[in-house]
Length: 210
Image (cartoon, rainbow, N blue to C red; front, side):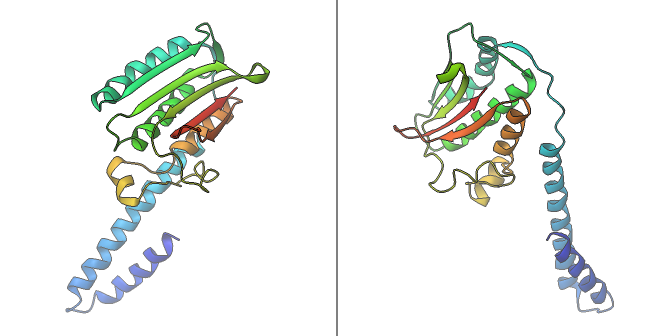
C-alpha cells in the first residue's frame, strides 16, 4: 500500500522532467515521494521493534524492588502534574520469575499509556499493584482515572499500530500504536497474559497475570 503511490509518483515525476513548466508539480511529487518513503521507513522500523524481540532471560524478581525502581522513574512527572501515584505489593514479599528488563519495559509502556490518558486531568491518578488472586495466580495491575478505552475497542487495542488517539495527538506525543502490542508480546513471551478491565468506578485497568 505504501509502495504503490511511490511507484506511481516516480513515473509521473520522470514524465515531468522534460516539461519546463512542471516545476511546482515536480517539486510537489518529489516531496510527496520523500515523505511517503520516510513514513514507510518509520513503519518498518517500528514493526521490527515488536517482531524481533530477544528471548526472555527469566530470573526471580522481588516485586517490591522492581516497583521501587519504577516509582523513582515516573512519580516525579505525575506529581508535577498535580497527580497522585501509588505502588503497592501485597504481601511485600511477593516475587516473580520473569525477565527483569522486559517486565519493566512492559510496565513502563502501560504507565506511559496511563499518563497520556490522563493528560487533560487536573488530578491524574496512577495505581500500580501486585497481588495474589484466585487460584494462587499473581496479578500486576496498572490503573488510572482517565476516560478508559472507548466501548467496542477493547479487543483492538492490542493490535500493532492501532491507537484510540487522534492522528494529531499521536504525532504530538510520539505515539505509534505499538505500546500495547509490545506489552502483549513481552508478557506472552514470559508465559503471562494481559487484559484490559473497565473498573466500575471508571478509568482503565490493565492486568498482567502469571
